[in-house]
Length: 514
Image (cartoon, rainbow, N blue to C red; front, top):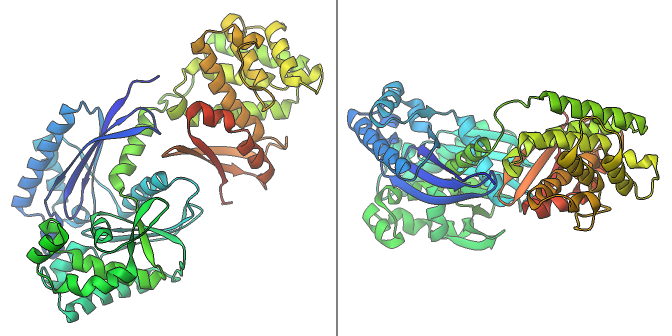
């Protein structure tokens, strides 16, 4: 088992700087250990004068110095720091980034709106899981409003609108009580930009929509709705009913009434108007609040990278000899060459894509290839019980380059390549191995079962695979030639060993034809 990795994500947003530290045990198992928020409104000067003031840069450098100290304290070895809307628009952003690097030793990356939206989307999809029919993600920040309309977890429409809460507050000069005329201005700004950029206008009806960010989380406490998929919700009708009370209060009164910080109290009226306008525009009754954002998206990607293989697989002489000998033996057993070779290729793809989950050593990849080539050789003896016959042939056949422990592992993989048999202590190959090697067998067999099922039709339609990692789940996006519904159904049925071994749910989705 790989050692845990301490990782961190920093988000330099328009309203505050935030740090999240986590301990990653795998791409699926990420444990939050510490978070901090530094109240610094980067957008305040940028949205009016398009520049950071010297005072803001000085305070930011101090905050980043502190973040660096915290990361050192927790032994962070990998991090990513990103800056969003306000920094993107600052004319002196290069000076800002350079100062942070010089004073704090942190590399700050100014990301574009597309990347910002993608990171938030990845975090949401991971939090909700693969079966939630999510249609909309809204991220209302200090500088912008990000909106993604989804279908089958793929972006159908995506826009970024310059109507963040801090931007509107500074542009319209409404930091406290919001009069009806000012509220109408905010509504019209949001509505006009929605009309101009979101074409055609979506009608989401009863669809599931989520809202990200501190604005949404604050308002969900003010206007809570029924829980949805286990998540807190923001109910639009209740928010509309409570809007007059929010707008007529001063900042200090909001802080006391709603138990919020000053930098949240001064923008929560604008946020409320924005969400009400959005709800009406999209025909939504509520927004679910998953409590994640771009920092969680960053942490997931760092974890996936940390547990992924960096170098391309290289075959040494013994590995090459094993594959040549295995292929030669399979040929003598009159194997179905197109099917076996395709299953071998799919097995390799799965092994490499799922490295962040299985953590198996590189040599295991070659054993998996050998098992894939031999998995159907038992048909030479009999179609009935061919998995058992295949195990016997792998243990006793004349296979150049396959000896000792490796032979027993490959034979066991062959026995368990389909749903006919599960690992058991009385099976010849499996029982000859120690517990560590038995674990390798179970994991490789779990991968081989999926690869074999993905060519259930023996038509070699699956071309490539892409894995995504979510909380308690692994998704496989399948790129294929033609309809592979039959293969995907069999792959789903063959996923039980994988799900039991890795304690995750595995699901499949065919990618849309390009």
